[in-house]
Amino acid sequence: MPELPDLQVFSRNLSHALKGLKLIKVNVVQSKKLNVPVKDLTKALEGEVLEDVIRSGKQLHFKFTNNQTLGVHLMLHGEIHWLEENTKQKFVIFELHFEGGKGIAVTDFQRGVTPTLNPDPAEAPDALDKTVNTNFWKTKFKARRTAVKKILMDQDVVRGIGNAYADEILYDAGISPFSVADKIPDDHVEALAKSVKKVLVDAENQILKSNPSIISGEVRDFLKVHRPKQAATSDGAAIHMDTIASRKTYYTDKQQLFD
Image 1 (cartoon, rainbow, N blue to C red):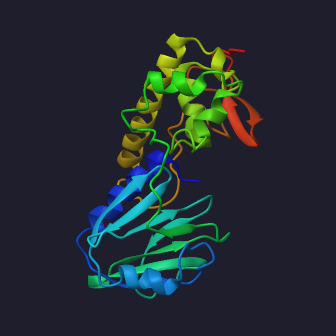
Image 2: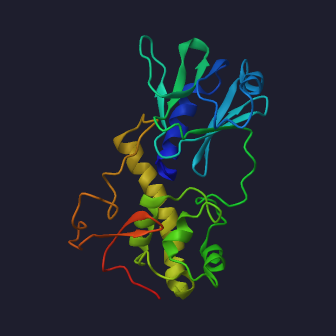
Image 3: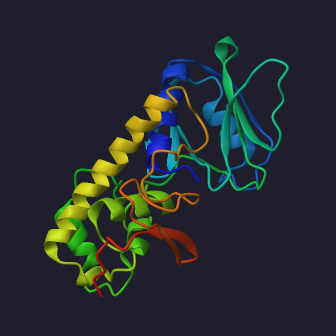
């Protein structure tokens, strides 16, 4: 599943290519997850100009100049492809055809991709929001007898962090993913708050450096601990794998456990 750094890059590249273009046609192939009838979607978007593509949590928002927004959650296996002549994508959920022959196809063999016309405003802050600071995490961890990784991944707490980057953040902060949230000392909560921003921003830069035009997929070869095929970190610490909330979790003995 693409996480915050991946989606940051996707939104940047999609906006660069499509911003300012008129949407000529919306072709919905699978409408089961769409929150409105197809006719309402086409009426709202066709003929309108794309103002921007932004990331909001784990969603991409295609914002149009008539104040309509198409939210897209790629879920586990969703992909975005450029529309090309003589190339037909499999497992298409929907297509956006813009003027000048440009456009995208959003695909998913599991049909999990969720398109939403005018998504409701999010209640939880985005992980890169300025409000997500040390005091924010202290408040969220207070009286929570829960593994800290579960809280990091909870989209009702903070939006954008998924399984892989929760591991990377906790590794960078030196905290075991199994630590009980309300047992983490204040100085380590401060370290975690710094690691959230540092890890996510650094990852975006790494993806841009190695795959500057990417609009789909996951780039993970620079990660330090969430590496399923790697036995040790670059400094020689053994990487262990266990599960938290049914998600594979990678960590080292160097990460302190607070329980």
